[in-house]
Amino acid sequence: MADPGRLLVVDDEQSVSITIKAILEQEGYEVFAVQSAVEALDLLAQRSFDVALVDLRLDRVDGVDLLEAIHTRQPDCVAIVLTGYASLESAVRAIRKGAYDYLTKPCDLDELKLTVARALERVTLVRALRERVADLEAANAKIRSLADDLQRRVDQATADLSRKVDELAMANARLEEAHRQRDEFISMVVHELRQPLTTVGGYAQLLARPNVPPEAQEQARAAIVTETRRLARLVQDLADVSRLTSGRFRIQPTCCDLVEIAREQVELARVSAGQQVLSLVAPERLPIVCDPDRIAQVLSNLLANAVKYAPGGEIRVTLSASEGHALVSVSDQGPGIPEDRVEAIFQPYVRLAARGAPPGSGLGLFIARGIVEAHGGRIQVESVAGAGSTFVVVLPREAAVRPAPVEETVGA
Ligand code: ADP
Image (cartoon, rainbow, N blue to C red; front, top):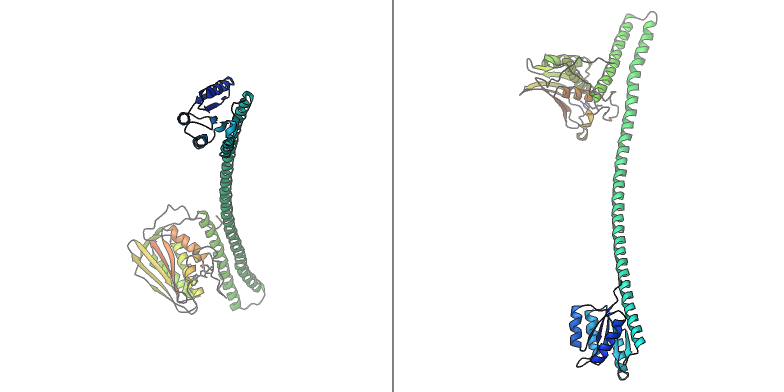
C-alpha cells in the first residue's frame, strides 16, 4: 500500500493540535503534534515530513521563522499555516515566504481535510516530477554518452577508412609500377628477340644466294653464331630469373681456382671490349669451393656491363683473399651509378634510364646477386657518380654449400 503521508502539526494550543491530530489520523495519515517550535525542530531533525501545519502565533517564536527553518531543513515538506482572522496579514506574509496554503482557525473540518489532501497531492506530484526530471537527465546523459561514443566510432571509422584509402592508393601505385615494369619487360623481350632473329634471318637468306664470296659467307656464319648465342643467353637469363623468384635455383659447388675463372672471363671480355683496357690483379692461385660456371657467369656479367656502360678507361678486376673469404672487385671509369639507385639496379628489369643506353634486359645484376647469395656471399656496388663504379663480390671460400641437386637445364 502507498505511504499515507506523514504530517507535523505545530500549535501552542494543546486542544487545537490534539484535535487536528485526531482528525487527520482518522484520515489514515501518520501525524505528530507538538506545541512549540523547539519540539518541532527536534522532530524535524529525526524524521522527514510531507506536510507541516504551523500556527503562526507560537510562543516566543514567529511561525514564519519556523516555516523558514522547515523549508531549509526539508525543502520537500509542504507547509500550511494556521491563523486566526486577526493575523490574515501574517498568513499572506507566510505564503509569500513559500507556504503552500493557509487555514483560518477554528478550522472547518472538510476544508482541513481537503487542504491537507491537496498539499499531499502536491508533494506526490513534486516528487514524481523530480523523478521524471531525474529520469530525463539520466536519459539525456545516456544519449550524450551514446552520441560521444558514436562520434568516437565515426572518428575511428573515418581514420581507418582514410588509412585504407592511403593503403589502397599505395597498393594501386605499386600495381601500376608493376604493370609498367611488366610492359617494359615485354617490350624488352620482344626487342631482344627480334633483333637477333632479324639478323639471323637476313644472314641465312644471304647464305642461300648463289655466288656469295667466301669472306661474306664467313662473316654471315660468325654473325649467326653470335646472335644465336645472344638469344640463348636471354633464354638462359629468363630461366634463371624464373628459378630465382620461385626459389628453385641451385648451385653445384666444387673445388676450383677463382684466379683461373677470372683470367678466362677477362680474356673473353677483352675480345668484346672497345677502347677499354682490361687488367687483372690477382694472386697466383685462389682456391675456393664454388659453382665455377655460375661464378664465371657473375664475372662475365660484371665485365660485360663495364664494357657496355663505361666506354673508355681501365676496367680492373682485383682478386684477394681474407679470413675465410674471397673478394672479387670489378671497377671501371664510367659514369657511375647515382647513390639512390645502387640498390635498385639489383632488382629485376631495373635499368638506369640513360639516353642512348646500350640494349639490355635489366636481369644481369639480379641474377648475379641470386648466384652470389646462393653461395652464401654478397654483392654490392660502390660508386661515385661520374667517376666510375666498383662492383664487389664477397664469397665464402668454403662456400656455405647448400645441398646441391643436379643443376636444372634451360627449359627444365
Ligand atoms: P642490363 O645491363 O641488361 O640492363 P643489369 O642488371 O646487368 O641489366 O644492369 C642493370 C642496370 O645497371 C643497367 O641497365 C645499367 O643502367 C646499370 N649498370 C650496370 N652496370 C653498370 C656500370 N658498370 N656502370 C654504370 N651503370 C651500370
